[in-house]
Image 1 (cartoon, rainbow, N blue to C red):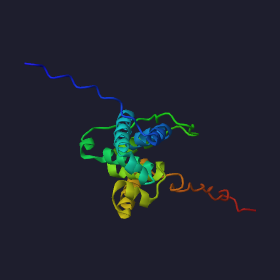
Image 2 (image 1 turned 180 degrees about the vertical axis):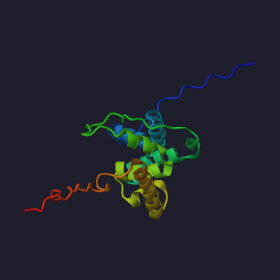
Image 3 (image 1 turned 30 degrees about the horizontal axis):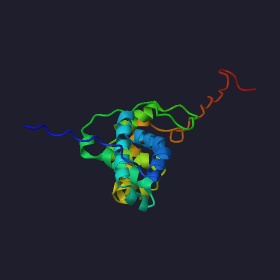
Amino acid sequence: MRAPAPEAPVDRWPAPPAFDEYVRSRHAELLRFAHVLCGDPHLAADLVQDALVGAGLAWGRVRRTDDPEGYVRRAIVNRYLSRWRRLRRESLVAAVPDRAYSDAEPPDDELWRLLGTLPRQQRAVLVLRFYADLTEAQVADVLGCTVGTVKSNGHRALARLRAALGPGPAERPAARPTARPAERPAEGGDGS
């Protein structure tokens, strides 16, 4: 009996030049986005890689949408929110991946920790609204839900963060100046 012939090795997939250019120009930003979304740099790399594989295989269709960035971000968010990912434990890290700029303020460790306690949908809304700077309608489109759902998730998430962080400087009651006790006339004197 003759052994089956070994399969030919799989050659590298020749990426279309436009896709290759897109990945080279946007990969670092997509990694930062995914890292802020999930809080784990390794999971973020997996999310971005999975999303780019899907986008690369469908690049002709993706490119015709005139919004490849939106397609890839939605793929990242969808993979993050998928059911099998929900079973994984996660923790946010204090250090954000390399950036093209430096923050003037150090990272707020408490805020990062609290962001990690939010439900995934609420965290996704906050990341898309405030990190990715998308409008509520754009967030709804990325998440595949209504604008009302985005608003309610955003409201609930911000309320939880505010409650956990306590009142901010603008919300704290102003300190009342202490009134000096009224001067009393000396005892036993008639005041003249």
